[in-house]
Length: 310
Image 1: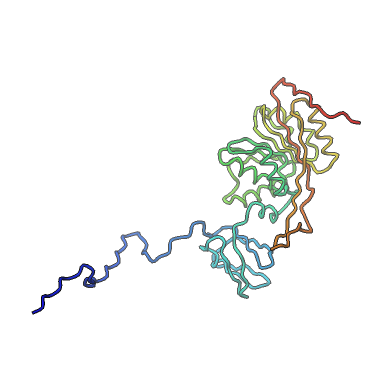
Image 2: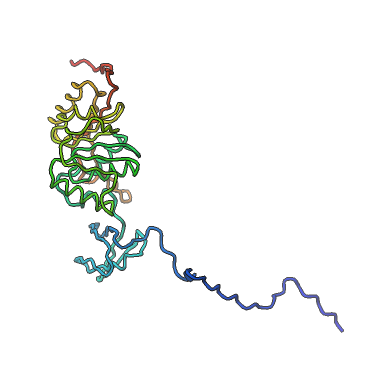
């Protein structure tokens, strides 16, 4: 009788019954329930929809509502819970790209009282003004609240922005826009005052000052008294005559570094394959920006040397 071969270690073992799924404990969700997507759209979120032609539409998500376009209706419920960057389709099967609007998008579409400071200039003001977390910023005037949103973001919760606005109707628009952008009401670290910056108390010391007003040179004594030594003053003026008057007023006061004036121009480019060229339209002059720093009390800046005129 032939000897039986020894069982191989590679031989298949007997099949085992599949293990039963664990029973979820009280309060736990079953494993087949999808986890919520981080950053998904929620009720009350402001959503920007972009159609195939690049046109923008802004909606605030409300359960059960529809947003109607000339290409059909879009259900809000299709967006609630969807991740940012999703594509939602209208009843006419047109796709719309869904994102939360950037601050620049919000500024260009928000209701206006006074003319807004455009994103290209707001970025220059925050950057060249060196506005950062924890700083105390003084602003005049508030206008429609566009720059205020950028300043509040820059200073963070530990900083503070004080805005002066002479016109009550403009102040109401600014308050509504800032509240809409941040959601949940007006930020606690924003103080909107109806009145003139000239009445600002000198004992309320600030780190940065931004002036967007018709005659910024008229409030320079008040600004010099409230801005700490080394603080940055940023002026925003629209015309060449305003620029000249304002810069000479800074020099005459004798408590500032040499003013630096410039403007920013934004020119988009068309870039498709080898067809690379400037776009036919650009965002050119909107205003002049002027920066200067506060000297220490009693300090006299060295005379700026300039080339002699021929």
